[in-house]
Figure 1: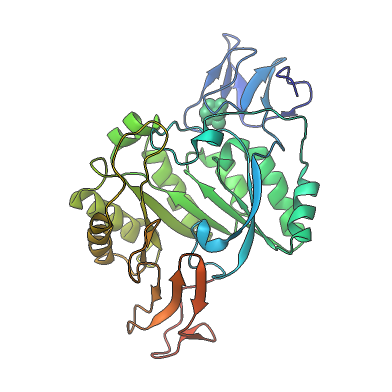
Figure 2: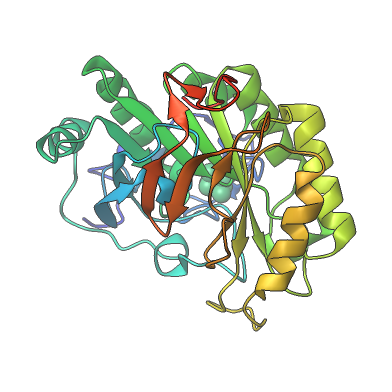
Length: 336
Ligand code: SF4
């Protein structure tokens, strides 16, 4: 596929400005794009007087994953999910763990239409699909079209996202999305500006919108030594989640491994354990990921401390639940 835009789908949420540039209205960057060029995300480009969704149907990978890998721990635990990734991202995080697809756009001659994606999901015996790996919302039209079809066949849609999306397009998705994992990378605007080339406020707004729309929501925070690992940072993150999203919102604290441009050491387990302890003061469900820490992945009943779900890597065993209730105290589990 060439970059002429001829075969590509016309994007939504844009306008042509009086100076002839195209303003993309999908994410808070509001890129002003010259004819023949793409926005920051690399996959939305201005051709022939219109904005094109260049990455529509161009997949970087498909895989069947345990749902715990998204990570989602409170949504159909132990199930498999058909996962699809595209190209591009509206952030440029120096620590990106998926930079080979997020910071690149490899055009391919194969366009996967939503019907093919949903057929592949069904052929693989899945009823759930995750839009993941790169930032799926830069491919807004593809996510929306696939999600509609998935719903038609009785399936569920999961979004794994940085949450950097404007309110109008996001509100088009809420009725279609069942669950999300949103990455809150830091509670500091300066962190988002310096390390992600984005801003924090729209991400927090997006999370509140998702929760208000009734979507199942879990949050991930990648803990990077020296950058976002202070006690104050963990306290602010957990308090914000408790106050704005609710104390039962699961939080995944994830260990950093050096990748892409950032030269920082891997996250030591003691830092994650400290973060876990601090966040547990505000939240009922805090998990430690990417690092084997004793019981850091288990779901424990907030009522009586009984282990409800035991996890080791991606092995999930439901051990303390009966009829969606804790076997010991009978408390209703906060699990979809
Ligand atoms: S979605 Fe892409 S083109 Fe549109 S404003 Fe965001 S970065 Fe720019």
